[in-house]
Image 1 (cartoon, one colour):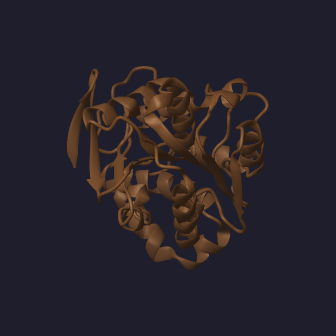
Image 2: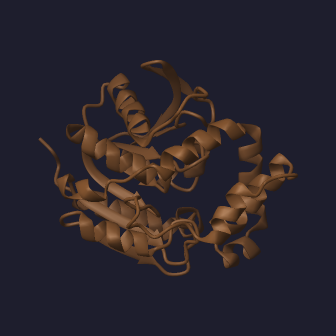
Length: 269
């Protein structure tokens, strides 16, 4: 991966394909490997940029407080370092928080938004399920691999988990290869818990697609309905049977929906 200096940190990134730029922003604790079902397909049509947020993968992991606006400014700084004035932006989970803030803080840099398995945060959002929260926080005595596998138990639907052990082993291996230190995960977690854009959603004035898995235990699907209702003109897709990582479980349909949406966005002069 290449490295870009963004203010006081270095972010690792990769660029695939040609065309209009498309920035992918991963979720809490996940590095750019998490787009393994998207990059090849999306890069056939778009200049697809993946990167590791601060705290994960090969990017710097400062042990200081993180905020979602900080992560959004990181993303903006990465685009600027690549001489990209504006890009389509796809964010999932916490990456959807970052994408919203990027559009609000740097509106000229965002051509369109795809917001996957995410919410507007704050007291009026639907909270994480107790099952998912326990899987994240009750990790005492577990090995690093045990922590990861416990997380995948709730991030993936039961049917996918039961039927795709080889894919899960592959993802566990990637996470172990470039582990996220617990302190860095906690810094991202706290940033996510303090996020709230509900009162500002009406200021997002680019085309938006909100998409989710219907059986998400981490960020319940009702959040996507509320999010889409708060953004003028936003579209909504609810994919039956999908868990939190529905973009991996149902990658073909997810990619199709994303490409169909992006193809409908007018080209900005």
